[in-house]
Length: 468
Ligand SMILES: [Zn+2]
Image (cartoon, rainbow, N blue to C red):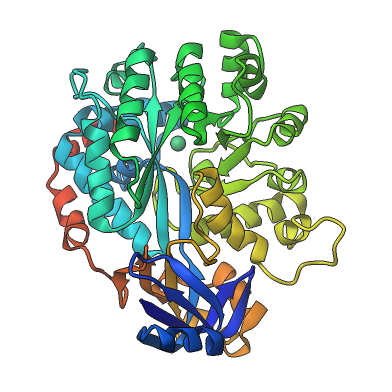
């Protein structure tokens, strides 16, 4: 057992002074509250105390939507003409050149970078299932990604994708007949059942990547296993037209017509859902994951996030293409985009509490990037409450990016964490009570060395494709 006692600690939605958290041998929080109470309890159990008055203890951040291998697009795929051009001349060539070593090294690089930025849980939407020539690999590549997550030390919800479109060359790495994809998803979920750091969720890819049969199969597995299921939906404006052509209805109405739209459904993006679809989304208890920086990079558009928040929809955040995986940046982008769109300020904190006095703190934003993101993955983390595993970050209050707010503490400190704190202020990161980043350095040697490893990878064969 061990006590973590910090200068400021997140509890019940605010930063509180001189609190502490008691953790058992499994890394589960058994007590959280005022330091005097927790220490009294800890003394009777002879638990050592980590006394860290110059640090703040915050819940670990959650990236609820990631494609880790896309870190390999950095630097050569940043200036295509548009989304379709990016897919044809960047994404698919990369996918076809990606060998196991590159996939694993890319995952280690991405997960390591996430941890250093305080992300303790990743929802990894994994759709590379076959060998480069299309030969099925079963769950081999999913296991490879899970292994990388374990090695780096990050908690992973593996969104095992069902994908059966195969018209284009790059898609041969993703495509599986729906029945086989479903059988493999069930197999992987059973294999990892009871694992404290890994969960498996089904994820039919999208309306362009998955047939009605694949979507229904994914939703069915979620129902059977009591999990959520994720799907990319209404990301680009064209997705609405495609949905009408292929399914005869707009994207969310298509899911409703397929009989799969309920509280287990999680929509990724949802930018081009119309008002009636957003109402339907709320009515059915559907959750949504937004990836603002990727949406900006790909020219997708801007989500009407305040409307969803007002309707009480659970919204999480994702780092998606992982150009610079950082949930603090996603929070800032999520809100700044709304300020620019609506010519107002403080949009999200205020609209998260309709009818109430104006919010003074960034609490609503921090919750998007922690507990709400965790709920979209069906995980109970992100609040530092009793019963949760201790997934947390220790923030150095002496970091210049927190001055002068650190001296004010409380709400001012929270506002600064959300709006100005540099990821360099993240000193230590804990996952399940274990230290995975110490003094800003990754504990995992494999993750530390991933940058050098990807630099030598076979994926580099893809790089010439953009100039062609
Ligand atoms: Zn995605």
